[in-house]
Image 1 (tube, rainbow, N blue to C red):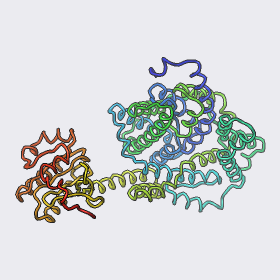
Image 2: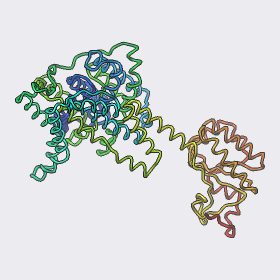
Image 3: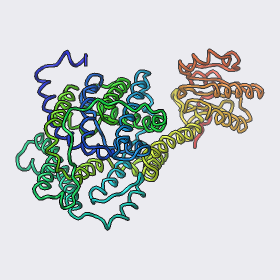
Image 4: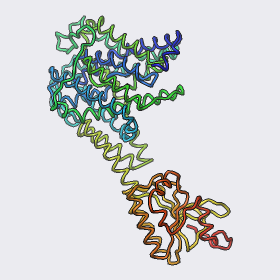
Length: 572
């Protein structure tokens, strides 16, 4: 805030004010809907949209990120607190507040410890698979509200099975309202803007009008429910939403509850942070700005703590509302402050007008919003490009659908790490030779190169650590066995960024075995940080060969005959 606040002017104020007005209109129905998705009273969504925006404006590094309830985190909240309290009970709300507190504390601690790099453990394929599966789960969970029936389950199969058992109890009028609202919102998202442009409305104005589709759906269905007496006909409505400012609340100091919520809070923190940083970096790049991941941890931690003390539940930076905020012209986080003021006014003045709002309309807004997150195309893209990434996407998606959001995310991260260990435990080690007429060395299996039977050059295309050190030993042993005239082994280390203690022991073992066989071990193109670590050991003192600055120097010094023109080339 100290950075952008000192340059704040009238033009910036106008841009922020217009963006805040548009985001407020969008955020009111979203906040109500996501609170219901989390199993909480609708007003809790409004509470969670005020203080977090203010705190993020103080500490956040993104100029346009809009913080508040989001679909995936709301689903994870419902899954977490549904295990410790009954939905609709005071204990349920108290557990949601406690979950926000734990998540905020974790994020704040991670920020102070500068652990923003931990987000790298959630790869894009895992996040994509998780969000796609979560979108399907959220949409399926809202079908019961759309049909006016009761259904339970945290997995897709359990939800669909429960829905199938209750399908005969579907309330026809509720279904009609829900289906029409869903169809209208899909049309607004895809078809309204082009229609308005054809009618002569400017592209930016048409986009803004299209974004207000959920508000129109809420206004129309609320008016019809009031005028036609839908409540008496069995349509479930939102009912009384308390007016007033967000209350002051405290998390529940219950060790057993904290123990149950620690893992869900950690997963929510990581997912929320990754989503926020991804959105923030994408939007910042468009204006040649940058965000600070560690500062974002602090800002999101403060935002969630503020939600815990004002009756809210876990929040993070939302993709849809942040993009709207950006497109509407927001210049600074002050737009979030103005949005918080708008939400506060809505809480004070507008909530009575939402009494007759059909719950099916809110379910429709959720379904339309989350289905836009589903991306099955990534399955095809990763299958073509990288089978391990496809395995990560597929396993995350299937595990989330079959086991629920928490288990699905854990499985996705586990599979990604296992695949990484599997790949790096079998590093690409190429035998290289000299490209004639140059000082370059290339793989003997891919290029016409010059080699000597007295020397083998191995290029290790991976850092050396405990999981792949034995693989290098085996490759050197194979080379020694295959070349009876071998006198020198040179390891080209241009791709080695690190050598851990286990790999160092393997190098020492290789050096001893080669020396016993009358063969020298040499290194070339060792990077500075790696050399610094090797100098702190006895390896270089005991090394029978040399460390060469370039691989060309090594080959010239050890087997100069490779440079002679009559020497035969190795071809594949």
